[in-house]
Length: 481
Image (tube, rainbow, N blue to C red; front, side, top):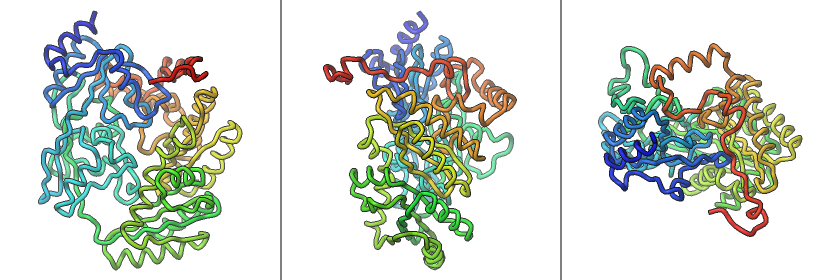
């Protein structure tokens, strides 16, 4: 009855075209990019502005119905996984760039604006937005704020949290407020810092004030091939130990290179065990001096290819940023992990991951931000062959290995649904209870994106709905739409 009453209220307040309740259309929102877990929501609402978002949240609070904010659905941790008896608040209609302020090097955007579109809007002023997730063409700034996304250039420029000055939010009771402000330092508790990276559990973003940077004067990029991932990892450590801070150091192993070359013809050597993409940017004299040092450090490389122009540099990055999607050419299903290890333990981590994959009888493609030790192992499996549970166990084991090696469960994708059950490996009971108290201060009823981050008996006992193909589908008689 609560859902029926809520639907009627939302239709009255937002219009018939602002509410989706058709079962077929609801399936569009059943998962994010972690497609192994799927839950069909009861309703989806499509607000047009911040007031509509507040109206929807307030209605959910009044009826005691859980809700999940959703951007482009590109998240990889199940952070936007709906609840079966809840509402998805889609922010795709809030996609306006409200202001670009070059004098103060900032922009004000709605949460549905894509990451790359911010830089496109700022380019006319010689500015850009530094965080650049691989999905930046499609991922939205609201989702970046939720997960504190980074990207290839976070080694030098930091994460979303380092580039957000303020957010307008709707709190879980429907109240609208602003966290942060125009001044670089705000008095009082850092509520903005708590909100960025809270994975949508503290409220819904309706506008973001981001910091813009001047476009670098000079950029130099190289691709270095190595005969093993361990040797490549040692080169990463050597670059940082030399006091050099590149804009980016990315690594792909041979399996990832195979997929990328097939997908976008990136030009990487198909026979190399691993490739490092190293990029420096800044003042011309500094870049040239440091770039020579980087090239000298890569003495263990079997080949070093220096990008001769912007086109070749773009080709390198097109390959790296296409990697996740390209791996779909190698396997019908895969999990993407997101653990972090100390740079000095990269080689050890990769060797352990390879051994774990062999033991599980599965393949793992490695694509990651090597400069800050943020691993993105892709565990390949076939749902039809019954490999889901083995792949899920391997994926979780890799995340927990990162903690064992002195790192973290997540570098930028978030905990979400995927790694909630692993949180006790990293945090004590007191730690988790303290985090829950902060969450409860914002959302005492627990309606805002429930079931994420924190382990619960339901999550850790039943796992919320990995897709199981019907026998007729496996036999090729029917297909899933």
